[in-house]
Image (cartoon, rainbow, N blue to C red; front, side, top):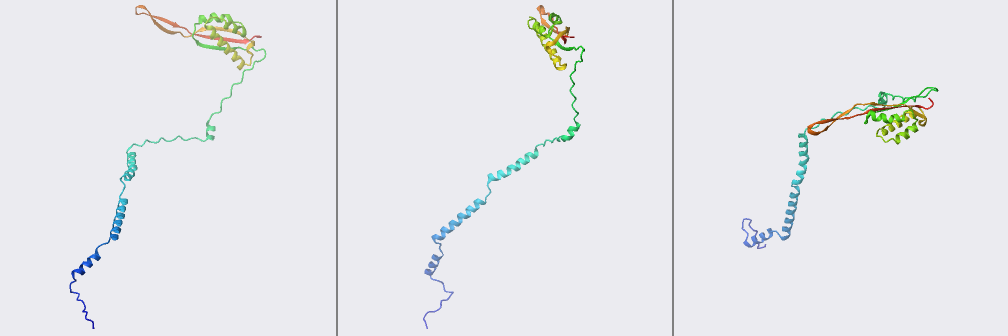
Length: 222
């Protein structure tokens, strides 16, 4: 039989045994490092889980814009006019009027080609002094006379003569060189009233006269 006796559980442990047990419970350096790493990971997780204030501000911005747009009065959209189809347009559009045919000269008939200029800024008296030189002349001779006449009304008569020749060639199919001036006259037009200041507070009336010029051409043979 062995001399060892079983230990009584109720018997208290010695101080040496308690010190050894406390040494076993103290954490080692490796355990402390692992605990620190775990704590850092938890902090990172907490930081990532926190909401970003700038992101929240950006998310709230569209809502604020929507609220502002809702507050602003919305302009009423005008209804767009309905467009008719091309076929309906063609049906509704009136047919263009036919161009008037040129007047053809019958043999033996007297043709008169007339041109008129209204409200010419010259007096009828001054215009008559020029037109008396070209009455009864042919077109070429009248052009030469008007080109060398030193009066202001000669330019207006020259333009009117060319207009009458163009009318004869385009509307009656006549030759301009074969025409002569049958009638030419100048009528009075409306007078423009103007005033000029004079001495002692008086005013003098100025009459700016106008005239209506007329030329009638006919072929030389008639």
